Length: 469
Image 1 (cartoon, rainbow, N blue to C red):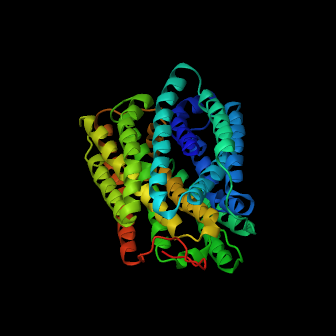
Image 2 (cartoon, helix red, strand yellow):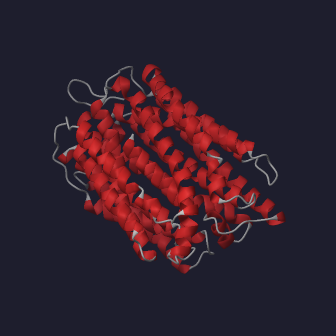
Image 3 (cartoon, rainbow, N blue to C red):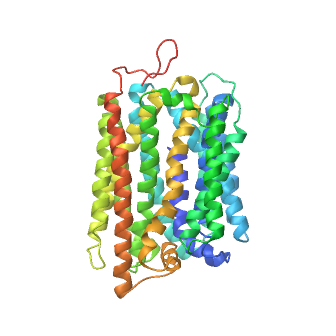
């Protein structure tokens, strides 16, 4: 829970500080988004590989190493002096974040039997919600009254406490496995994701040109090469054999689509509140706190329900509830009561807290024990792939009705809107919400499809170690 908390704090607190970072380090408006995306991209690329390291050298050891790297990266971010340094040190933070997030799911799977994992993942959800709320409150106070640098310094004492706690209470009880690191897969997937992401992000601020098209085509070509390499590799970055387990594919793809749809919601709502409604970043974020609080409280109960009746119904219902939340968001106007924002955030929080424990439990329950680290890393890779593209997708769709540079400035909290332009931009936000609803609906269909694939067995493995659904 502490590991999830510290990464959640870092996610929300940095978003609030983007305008101050832009001004303090003289970061170009089009580049400031990479302070967020760079971190997520590194976590996405490394998650499956550092999960593999957990299988090789001990999941708890890699988990604790992640905290140390995260602390060092946070301290260096606080000492940043220009655009290149803040983005580079955020990438280092991402290495620590990958070690923590990729191995945390495997540690839980090691410590808890399959019939209790849903509840454990539910309590992990409390860590995320608590961290998100702390990030919003502390971020607003720090940025307003102290300095943006302290949003990174604050990670240092929290991280040290987390390391000491982990050293005291966590012990490796898993057998070591000989693994190989898939460097070719990492390089081609990294170049591919970066190329596509660079192209999509630049499309959010300027029209399509030759350089953007080149990055897009090059990125797609690298992703194609990555697929071919993975098919031939002895120990691929994405373990294709796991997809032979009946429930694994729909669970992982549902996680990707949920990340693509829902991670953008936070930024779409903040764009609405800061742009058309003219609120400050802190006031806008505080309206979302009830959703995190109530969602965190729901997590353990939905996890326990998944343990009792299986993950399919809680996960699918959670996604359907999130579709309802986005439908409410899609009806926001320039004069709508802000209570609708609060209500929608609560509904969305309940839906997310129903989906995550159940889906995470389903993935780890289906995984053979000896590859818990790889499976946990793959789950994080799929989730983060969706999250990485959420930013660019949100801005790209929302900016279709006004100049893209203006939409980008609204996103980072440096510009507000009034009158007719505000109404037009709100319509663009509605389109983005409807697009996200489509992704969530597809995720719900995939989640529901697991009902006919699931065999009636409570164990993740049979006595001979063969994977079961």
